[in-house]
Length: 221
Ligand SMILES: *Cc1c(COP(=O)(O)O)cnc(C)c1O
Image: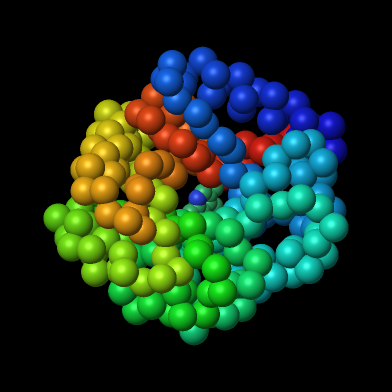
């Protein structure tokens, strides 16, 4: 599994080259393509923040790797009825986009959960997320829930080769994040952007990402 350590070193170097002077960027290792052994190798190589997009897979890996110092991020579409499957051990949820979902998270949790609001910046119909023009109202609607702490915003760039289009989406998310932060809501510091995947993270980092979610580039041979 030496290629994993090599990939991480590469990604870290790219991040250093592209990041803003004042910025801090952390990698979430997305393990949805990786089995338990590969996931363990990723953690051993130094990536301790892991992301999964299916509750069952996350549960399985959590159980198998309980002995390791892992912080778990849920990054995919989350069905309300599945919140209970991960709530005991999940640390961050990147896909909060419905009041009902936020209510269920808050009700089931026994401690505050770090939440990102997923925003559909590109407006594609196939994409999940709150519409940008409804974002502030949405944050206000959920921010009195006791176990919801809105730490930031998350988005996925459109599937396109056009770098300008991708950059515009990340740039807009950063502006929205700063707008919510300015409200100084007690349970919504909203200081971070979760944006950028294997194909577009250098652009996301330039536009101010605090978390990049990297899957395929981590395990590429
Ligand atoms: C799969 C996935 C990623 C990682 O994708 P790669 O292109 O493999 O890096 C990031 N975020 C979300 C929400 C994903 O589902």
